[in-house]
Image 1 (tube, rainbow, N blue to C red):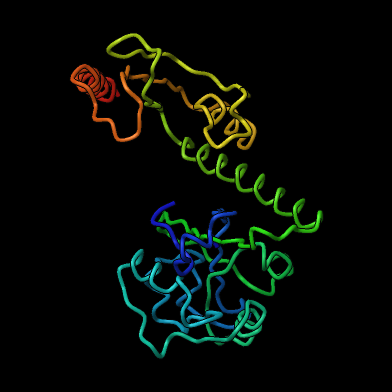
Image 2: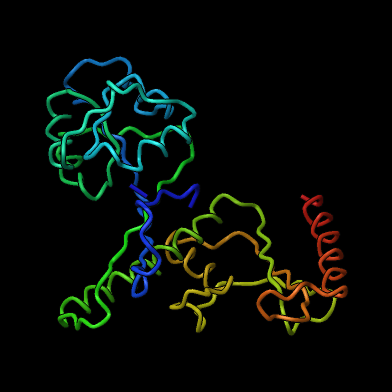
Length: 267
């Protein structure tokens, strides 16, 4: 399963999250329905509205899963208690679907083989939703982890950074024009506007990825040029945490907003 709104694991005390917090994005969301060899007109079309799953037995690994409230919020419905079936594991969910006992939502990576062999069937949701969970890795500060574990965690960090950049880049798909907006200490007042192109710059492997790097990710992931993009840089004055915007910064922002409205109106 995979920001908007976020799915989170139960809150952990901040003191326990001192070492590492990983926010893992699962771009592939798959809704599994009953076997194709079992007649079922409710699910024949292959695409469904999210709220329609409330009519089916919904299979989960545990009753406290955050998936249930997220689906209810996204689909604007409430599951009846008797429709929630706790089966204990993803493997048990798959076996239950084999026996035509219900439907579920799982990560596509967990059912690649079954989908390829036609044992399970993927149903696409008509709503444009994404799922996201927070996964925490916690250790004692005075513990030295084995090298293999450190290497594994480093690979996870890199995967998270890469996947996050891909999700940002995919927001560009299907857009006619894109305007990136940022505050700047170097731009001429009140603001500057420039056309930007894809570039693999020094921000490519960091958290603070530049707009140019996002365009580069889009070009590599989609194998096509990104839509026309511009960067609106609004001049700022002070950057200390908690400092209120100055009068000149507020004026710069207002002028940038006025320009942005005209830019959008041009179509």
